[in-house]
Amino acid sequence: MPTRKGGYNVQQSNAYIIIFTAIMTVVVGGLLSLASQGLGPAQKKSIELDTKTQILASVMDREQLKKMKPNEILEMYNQRIASLVVDIKGEEIEKDEKGNDIVAEEVSILKNYKRDPADRQYPVFKYINENDPSKVEAYILPLYGAGLWDKIWGYVALQSDLNTIAGASFDHRAETPGLGARIGSAEIQNRFVGKEIYNPKGELVSVTMIKGEGNTGLDEHTVDGMSGATITARGLSDMLKKYLGYYESYFKKINSGSMAKL
Amino acid sequence: MSTDTLEQAQEQVIEKPKEELLSKRRKRLISDPLNEDNPITVQVLGICSALAVTVKLEPTLIMSIAVVFVIVFSNLIISLLRNLIPNRVRIIVQLAVIATLVTLVSEVLKAYNYEMYKVLGAFVGLIITNCIVMGRLEAFAMGNKPYDSILDGIGSGFGYAWIILTVAFFRELFGSGSLFDFKIFEAIGLANFPTNGLMVDSIGAFVVLGVLIWVQRSKTGYVEH
Image (cartoon, rainbow over all chains, first blue to last red; front, side, top):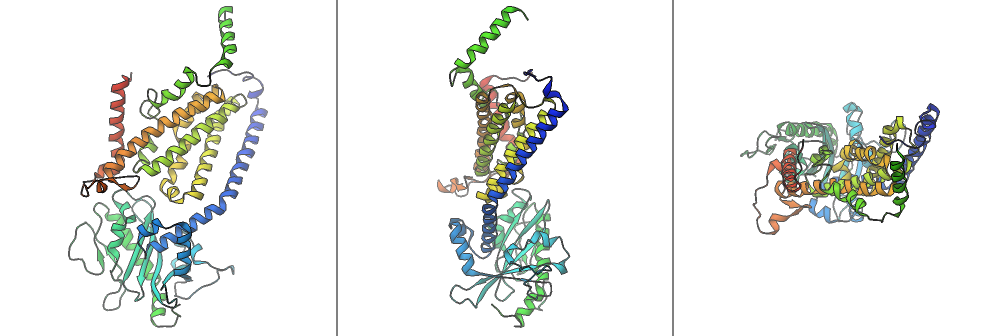
């Protein structure tokens, strides 16, 4: 340790140390809060862009989305997506308990996940027809659940029959790379396309990802699994089934025509 | 202390300001950590992040830039403050400086490259605990002038960067068959080149790192005693 000038008198006193650390705390804290304030708007924008890209990715080609500029994605989102929030009974809700407006894009699925299913807010994103805005091409629903190591989430898109899956996009925090993390890849997500969530009797059976990979003779309610990622697959199936269940009353309302299809 | 050594010491003190901008000694500050005294392969520091972020080249590049930025600026700041920092709390002061810089990097990333922010997530935050940064502050910046400290930071930063970039190059090439997400094998007509799952796993990083250390040590002749 090199000895420094004055290193053994004033600088060793408690008063000096306290003053030094106090000044440092103020400077560092001030700097960080400035940065946080200054970067806040840009961060909000990139989170918004990320959410909207993910929602669009469940009904669109990912490669195509990747090539689009942020502005184009936002514009496309504004044109093609209409959103609303429903509760567990399928009723549209516009204001929260405090009377503030609810914006579907700003509903935190994570925060809602921690609440009782009956008290949650459930956003619905409707992918509307390019030419006829009264026609819904797909209903995009957010999902949230547990994988093997940490949370997994995503969006599933149902065709206007509310039965056939039009697309899905999943993401994860810490699934094993090369195994469970594959749920984030187009290869896995495309397996869900065309599968059906209701059986002929009209019961919600959802779509299950089965164990093992390379299975043949899959029916319309099962998708091929991921080798070495059984638990992640189970979490995925579980998440899908639970969330489709939460939205079931909303589906029924649409099917019975009591809710405008817009 | 005898008069002789004192005079010598004084001479050195007087001579120092005459030193060239990039004297031999200063060049060594940069070149040593790149090879003979590399933070990863020789000092074996910062292995954790070297394993964790090197699956693909793009996040590795961002991580490298982040570490170089943090190490250079924390070296500079600590070196400027070195005569003011109370000895008894110096580690906390160093940590606060590093943590501030890392938080800034993380916030900027969140604002302007959210995709990478999601990929690197915790690892950018973990630069705080990267022993390379802390090690340079304690071993070098606390006792050297700002300019030298910057050079030392650049050396160590790039010493870290080139190693993890090399590891990532081989891991992405053989693990995913791509470079910077560009499917290299498909482009040269080897569409069904088998990718190696081991390379995607952290084990792959150990293997590549091991080979790198082997090649390097057989060249420099460095032996651990």
